[in-house]
Image (cartoon, rainbow, N blue to C red; front, side, top):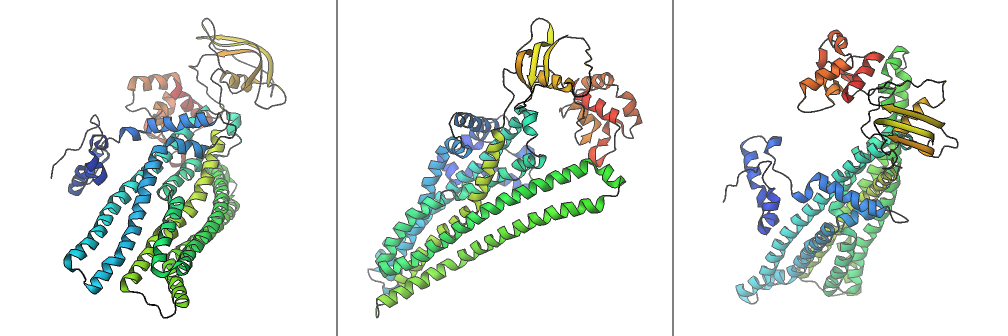
Length: 544
């Protein structure tokens, strides 16, 4: 057996360099397994991913199909995802059908093999002729099952990660007025909860249509053993279990939507409480705040409990379907054919056929019935977010001359606002200038700055601004971490000269001397509380 080295970051992915046999048998992963057997793996031990699975490329493909889908009268994110991954879906669908088709073939071939064991007619040669197809079906099932499920699981991973990137990019392009319609909990749950639904659905995506095809084939094979009436009785039990699971799937869909609503409310409330924890402690509001969280959590737990009851019923159907279907087939057979008998091979083949159908119908369709509604709700929620209005590309044309910001008789309004935020404003700001905008409350000072960022619609005149612009809002934004991490904006490695320049420009030197641990002082929930001025200076520092 060859001893292949672990590829470095510059080397091609083992998947891309692997042969067909290595991909089907997953031999390209053996070097990593051997290394993991000798010592614990670290991140640097992981080889590069396949080129087609690189996250920027995956996100770009999904985004491209989604932008094309938005040109339709009724865009659908689900349809865009299907077009993006159609090759994997087609190939995995074929392998999925071959996977369970080989199980049906094994069950049918079991009848002559068991009858030969009982009678011994024909000698060993006849037994080998009947047993060899069983072995071949098992080998084919082995490769088709694992490689098909791997393709589906990989598609789920790519859909989850690609949509996560798209949601983050959409968040940066969306207008603040549009984001105000979404709660923080809604946006957070899109990434933390909704994107995970693809991992649950994709492995069982082909179960509905494959079940229909295999059910028809199995019905004919069972009818050859016990007749069409008994076969209808046995398969009818399986179909009835699917109908019950489908009904439970719709119930699951409603419960998932309610759970998502309660989760959004809980996350939003907890976030607001954590942001105002000083006021909560100062006014001794702990008890009523805990009661409010508990009430929302109870509603969320109630819907989760009902969903788990549906899951329990579905699981119970899976374990009892084969026994009930076998009983129905035997009862109908002996009732309609009084005095008839079945051989050992007939009995074994019948039970094996019904058991093979159970695996795809009672198990696969059960998981599909639970995961599909959840995934559908998640896709609709993500599509609602992706359809929010973005800042137009031409919202801020470049200024002329040396100016950084120009307003020529500009009249701007917030999207869908009945009246303009300000009218006929004229302003020109050159590099190095300091301009103070003064006026009474509500006259449009902040709106003027937002218009420079493209957040407002220009209804008259013109607004021109350079794209290299920095906006320091009235409410400082502090990232949980140290002062140094906030100033460096997460840059790795940190530029010491740029860091010192930012500290001097924002007058942070005296603040760092006052803090107990200087630039390594932790901020946020785990650290100290800063004054308003300190927060403003730290929030301004990353932009220097």
